[in-house]
Image (tube, rainbow, N blue to C red; front, side, top):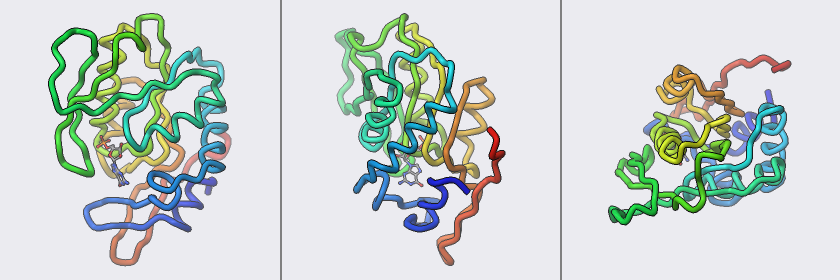
Length: 197
Ligand code: 5GP
């Protein structure tokens, strides 16, 4: 079991509706030492990749992305959620359905901060159905840039997103993959992974 899986077992709370609450260390109160370990691990897993930018999505991806970025020595851009449709042409726009809030948002990135020369690592806290990632992928594509890899803290392996993204051929690394969880007894089951990976 790795450091993040241990922490999920210790402090994560399983809620009804397939929601894992990790707000004591990941997406409300944030454990920066843990983020730093995550950055080190992503750096190892994406060793040799030519990455010059990190893209994430507000709000809960931002903290993780910033600490991860220290390990890659690159800037972070975050996709902003916007209710109004921007038609002035200065923005890349994608539509993202929120898993937790069940709402649709436009996410936008200024054309100033992403272009065809960019080799991008996408970072997010959770992967569930993959909508957030699909939106970010679309934005990098609109910019003509390259998605070099995708780093996720917690993938919910029983939802479709991971499979869809891997089938599209992306190099996706999730630090913890939850294959099952039970709100009644609070149990969390992780995918068994290869220690030597
Ligand atoms: P997706 O777009 O892959 O369906 O969902 C990803 C987004 O939904 C993440 O950015 C995350 O904020 C949120 N999310 C999805 N599942 C969970 C969950 O079980 N717990 C929490 N805290 N957030 C989740």
